Length: 285
Image 1 (cartoon, one colour):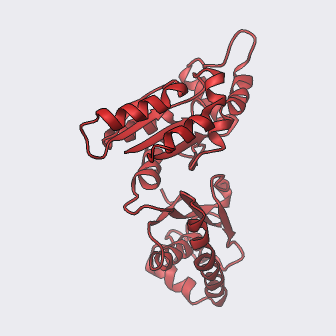
Image 2 (cartoon, rainbow, N blue to C red):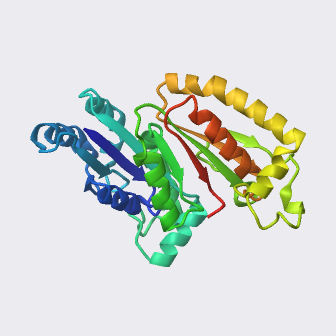
Image 3 (cartoon, helix red, strand yellow):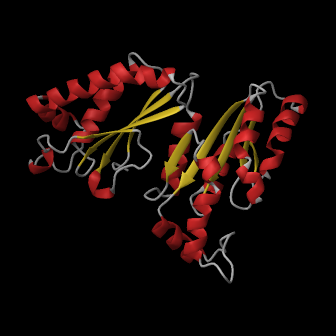
């Protein structure tokens, strides 16, 4: 059995995540009382007609605070039954959450006559702390649209053909902000930039002309060797520590040339020695 627990602050994309999981064959339950989690897992094991049942539940601030505070012990009880359980925690910055609520005119579950929307959003972080602290995978949806969020969930959470740690090598541009869910970040803005070559400006690190230009730069090759040596040495130790997900982010200014080129090379090198290595280019979409 595989159980996925989806949580996060209101407006971060939990409904979208459940929709993706339901489309992928999961039996989904929204707003499950956290206290029922062990019983749900037990019943799914005993009564399901499937050889490998797939269940996803949403647990969020609509729960009783006393149930949320007990989440760590409830999770231990579920995992003691040898159930594969992943926790997906979605979040976004406060400005983005405020904007989303203003656009949809939805009522926040914690807002009241005595508590403003901004206060409710901040209080929600504290309330969900016991779940956030134990999350296997955190996804910041601040800069993701609906389709990008769907693709991210499919890539990170569902594309796991092998058990063990799922590694993601991701390119990004600093001008759109650093990925807050990255475990390791490498800044490659010091390298020669193809953007200043008019014939290469509109291309990306995926195009042969840009790749050839960067491959001919000694600093680029030196940077690649240093980063790949570090990752090949230390990522297996991340895996040995039972980490479910590790994100390696490679950043340049715009996220189109240098970071993309190096991410592609690093992804291919890591795939030779590690299972379940994924590659994503955040700012090419």
